[in-house]
Amino acid sequence: MSASVGGRSFPTVTVAMATYQRVDRLASVLPALTEQASRLAPPARIVVVDNDAGRSAEDAMSSWLGPLVHYVCEPTPGIAAARNRAIDEAVGSDLLVFLDDDEMPCSNWLVELVSAWQRWGCAAVAGPVHSRFATTPEPWIVASGVFDPIDRADGQRLGGAASNNLLLDLGQLRRTGLRFAPEFGLSGGSDTMLTHEMVRRGLEIRWCATARVIEDVPSSRLSRRWVRRRTVRTSNDWSRVAIALADRPIRERADLTARAALRAVQGLARRVKGTLTGQVSDQARGDLALASAWGMLIGAYGVTKIEYGRDAPRATPRSR
Image 1 (cartoon, rainbow, N blue to C red):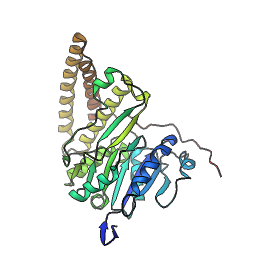
Image 2: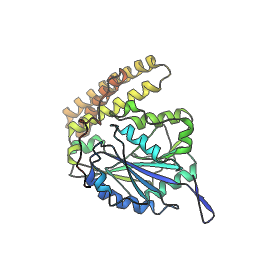
Image 3: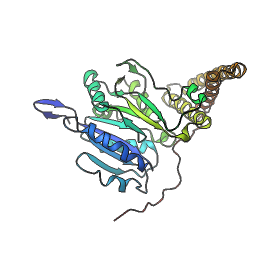
Image 4: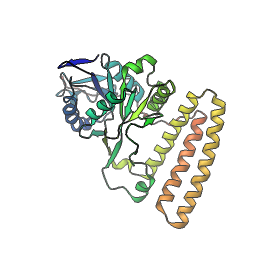
């Protein structure tokens, strides 16, 4: 519910960060989050959702717990379960803001998101994510454009959004009854599914160009193999969402098949051109067009690429 401060009504805000076995990241991001949360009136609540059944983040969180910072464990594996737990924990709040555990908010990030929502009254506000590399990426990685930030006009209406920098109006969301789809929990794409369904039901998502976050990209992600696999997975997610939301799934599947074939032909042609001319950008983007075509095709026929797979939960020793 909104709170009254000095006679003026302000929204109540919960900031949620889902985490899975990234304990070292908490000490980096929590100081920035608490500082930004305290700038709002009333201050925002911060909820860290530990998606490890072994509660690996619990000890690291103990020194941060207080009026602003809260810890919960969601043992059901998958990012969709963690995000839905965040929605449940935000009961009583007007707004829920998502931030990934490998990101750092830029100055005024939270204020910018909330101010944008106050200006536009939309159901969701998304913002840009900029990459910060652990090591200098090779030219192929740079030329691929995978880590380039999305550039959109401030206030632009969106057809969907990722949840790595996203504000949700919980009142509007709850009226639809929508939640993150559990069938996308281990594959990824539950945010794509949710936000596209929101727009389909007439809700509005807008872009706030000034609400920026920085994503830390480890060296393990700066390989051609990782980038290709991620491209397959994201196209797979997109294709599966398109089928799930289609009024005529058979026609949608045929359309996706044709688009995948065209993309594969274009990608192969660009890849060959890059090889003949030595142009790294053509080589990289041709490769990724082929990867995208494959992900789109198999997604159209129900094949799922798992992004958040994990071993059986392990018990994590905790201090007593």
